Amino acid sequence: MQGIINPSQTVSLTSSADCYDKPGLPLLQISNQSCDAIIALQGAQLLEFTRKDGTNLLWLSPHAIFAEGKAIRGGIPVCLPWFGINHQDPSKPKHGFVRNQDWHLIAIHEPDTETTELVFAYTACEEDLKLFPHAFSAQLTLRLSHLIDIQLQVSNHSDSDAEFSWALHSYHPVETLADAGVSGLAGLNYLDNLQGLKSVNQAGDIRFHGEVDRVYESVPTRQQITGTPNLTITGENCPTAIVWNPGAANAAAMTDVGEEIHQQFICVERGAAFADSWILGSGESRSARLQIAKTTSE
Image (tube, rainbow, N blue to C red; front, side):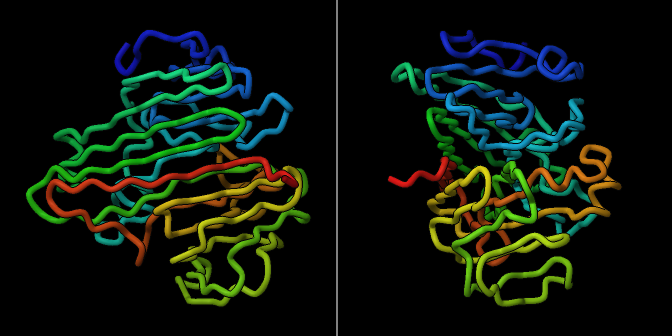
């Protein structure tokens, strides 16, 4: 099957039918001494990650759709080569197109019994050039141990400068939405998508008392999700943070979310979007790194 190499001691081939009773997509199942995880080859999307102590770092919608070419609601979709609505042509797919296409698994490394590393590659095809007129490739390295460690590299193979905006659109579980918060962004201005991208100052931690859709530019390296579980998010060369929860009305109208399901998650995403977007020259590559970990008192 395209995109599959031989499985390893900790990596096995499965499917959405086997894992979720929803036929449609091939999946990879990872189990080492630190964690259990599930990855979709479509989008190289990490869907689930559970530490051996039982802590879930990611949320996957119970109503997620597993179909070729359809976005999977949850985990960590890779939004690329643009984030959000394409402002030059809003008719183009939201969040780009690589999250809805198969990536190639090109390597599996197992440096020790507690760590599994998977390397995925994506190369834009001729059809992609109709949506984004710059030849490019991307490589995503998922290093899974007691934490999630992701490295994304983007390369411009075209003859001219190309603008890339992207995000690792991570969904995180919360036990009680009203008690959840996000720290590490206080005092910054954000673009409020509920007010036409109006610039608003963030006072204190972010709380969720209704729909939240905000873009923070030039952010500090680290943010924390407070509540249950407590998570720490650390980004290198990820200057943008996006914080999102659809709120009750939007969630009820979304087939792959549903009524009251918004109470189960928040998105705290890192990437490079809006004024932080990457401009890559011909032949230039750039990389970023994201770590998601259980917050400890150490």
